[in-house]
Every structure is written in structure tokens, then in C-alpha cells.
Length: 156
Image (cartoon, rainbow, N blue to C red; front, side, top):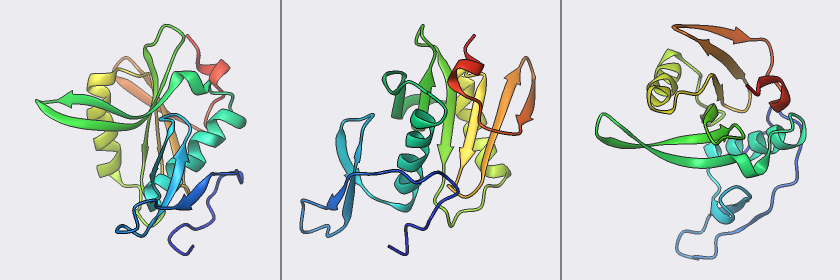
């Protein structure tokens, strides 16, 4: 699985199968947040490994986590890769994933910052599975954190 390299995340057990539609011929992974099988792309590989990391090591509640969250930005439909909500269902964390082969650049941070204009989450995370960045917004400024915080550490 050359397209799906080992990531800088703890190993996890993902449910993977050959795509049921033989015309596509790819692989699928079971997304526990969407409760369905999705195409296993390099970016999806990162997403699934990262959300399992959030659930198992950082105690993020699966019931308050959603993948592919639709939003409207300047009249255009967009999707946040992952959104974690607080217990009042306000966005707490927005996560943007890239494939491991994609460098995390200012353009990636600009993308998630635009999404956060709509979402208003105090924490943003960007990951390509190899490098992970987390920042906290307070007012008009942001601070990069050394590590991804546990859920109980970021609850308001």
C-alpha cells in the first residue's frame, strides 16, 4: 500500500475492503463518524488514522465529532474535513487534512482560516499524517500549541 504510508500517528485498526463497485476497483475504509464505507484515498487514510488518534489517545468523543461538515463560504459550498463540537454543539475544533505527499503550507492554513470564519472554532488543526499543527484562537490572535490537546483540556 505505497499510497498509504506509515504515519506519524499511533497504529490503529481500520476496517478496509475492496470497493464493492468493481468498476472503480479501489479500496474503501469504514468511517465510524459517517457510519458508512468511503473511498480510501491518501487524504482519507490520514483522516481515519487521525480521528482514531483523537478518539483513543486524546479522548475526543466520537458522538461529538463529524467528518465532511458542509458550510457556505461567500455563497460557495465547502466542507470541513473534521469538526469536533463542545457539549452545547458549538464547533470547538476544525481539522484540515492533506495527503502525506502534500506539504503543509501557508495556503493550507489560509484554507482552514477561511472555513473558521464560518465555524468560529477556538482550535484549528492541520495534518498530513506526518506533521501536525494545532493553534488556538483568542480574539484576533492565535497561538501555536506544542501538542494536540486532550478534549478535557480544551472544553470551555
